[in-house]
Length: 485
Image (cartoon, rainbow, N blue to C red; front, side):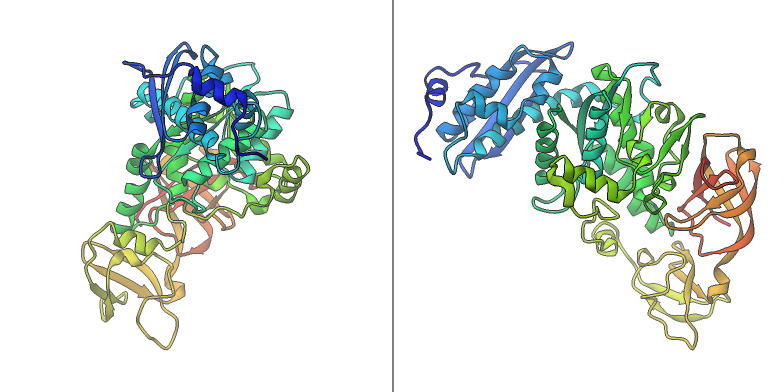
């Protein structure tokens, strides 16, 4: 293909559309790197979800300048949902075909700048709105905001909803500063990939910048919990304070009825959570804190599918995400080394490793390296295996003992979120991959409950989640956070 530009490109260079900058915009977005020579900036004026004004400034090569002009012309005056659906293919059509070899980045650059302007628009509207449940359920209507992480599960979720006749808008959350090229759900590459996937399905795509909220409600809680001898679950914290509230906020702003994610779970009447068809992928354990009013407007399309079926659907529909690897356990620690992550953020002090009688058995380099039930890395030799049975951050002690010393028959739980009457709780699960154990529950004091277990459970750590299920183990009655003994 010739490296010369097509007439449409030249036309946009000679007669640029909507060049300039809005003085008091609804949103501003910039993409690119001045050091590399190409920078695009879009400012937008949005009223009642209509792009009443669009202006662009591009510094760089002719391809980027023409792409900026073409994109501004394409979205000017359009409904926000239609503008968010404009893809690289649409831009190529407007410019007479694909860009010359080596200039393909121009399309990605200007689209990213426009979407960052949309993102800024939502940020200006949101303020503290994510901290409270948004709006509540709506009756009727087949419109849904589907969270899209860049993986196969979220992509198939959006696809299934579209094929079921829903009006679908997709959203990707910027939760932390993921590194370019990493597997993190928030890396720049993953955001671009999620947008490209949505556009290939003909769906509008938005991004929401939730970094400050995620840092405050998830990452700081993660670090603080380990510093205080607790074992947190960041996915639970994210579901409790970030993901579902943000999806609901965007749905309300767009006038949409439902929200959806790629979790493997089902919503049943109550509303309550129910385990999915694929029990090996069950995620009800991390969904217990979702407020009832948000759960009532939530759809989990994958609850009726097995993972193998989900990948097969992606392959059959030609989705590029069909063979993406499984996501890591903690999205903001892609390498899985949470101890190094913690040590970069908290001051650690050495202390004693002691037995249950208080006898000193050795030394440790910091309590953040330990959690209840841990066997490896204790640093103390003994004729029989030793396990961490307690972490005492104030004394700087790590208590170790035999495996049977970890057995408990009572689990105290706080911060509960009930979907059904507590009297329906017949079993409790205290680990993500654990099995439910039969129990009876009673309220000890306001907001605090205790589960009396029919058989002992090993290594229940403060800070973990305890999720109660009905007698058949299928429906979630409620859940909470494990407290002290």
